[in-house]
Image (cartoon, rainbow, N blue to C red; front, side, top):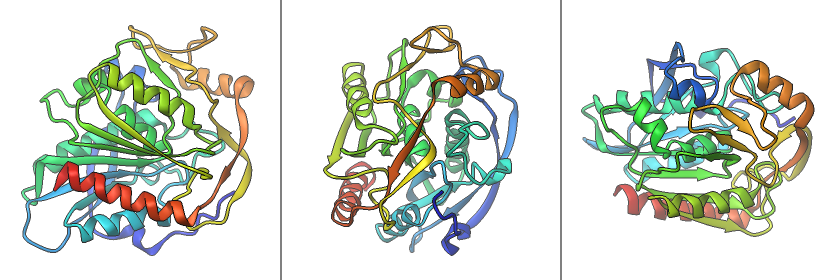
Length: 307
């Protein structure tokens, strides 16, 4: 297990409570059956008067880690605000690495779009320059937040994220209704990744570009999950790792289907599927040279997209 010592920067900024929803899978977003969920997040503004561009930042399966907050510090120095939803703590959870049940990617996408609406009403924020970035589980939702059927459901007024920056995202989901935002997307991914493998992300990038999107992916050699952290490389035997292929499809009717035809749209079905199909164990840890490059690439991307 990765040490979950809280970074004191986790609770900085203006704490804002707002209403999201609790969709377990994309299915409940698409059919509108998700129930309301109260959540909170932290808004941090850079120096100046604004209105500022902003990045909605989304954590991974271990919650907020120090390297996520290092990106926040960099964004503030660039003159960019940040908003960090506390998707886990608001639901009474600290981490989901070994279960992936209590808080899901779909829930976090709901939190991000609710934050987008919240920020649009803030005079300190430029509503047309709000990007989304996420790491691991949050990286997956930063990717699929660009899928238009979800955007149309969660932001019916037409507001969209101006840019998407997924970092080692979970990209195991295919979609039958293959329509994507044309906002720029830049994925940062380790080539050696065995937690959320790189091959599905490369394939999905090509798929997005073939269906209206504007995506690129940067691959970092000799780099595993959390390569942009300062943690030592280690093997975690109990975490749920994704396969090297996209093995889930969102059908046209919204159901989440495995490649074997099993419907995993509900909590019960996911638990059963994990019991029979789950791969356990993955590497996690930093690569100092590639960490430096990733921060430079992130800075360059957000400069192009927001400044």
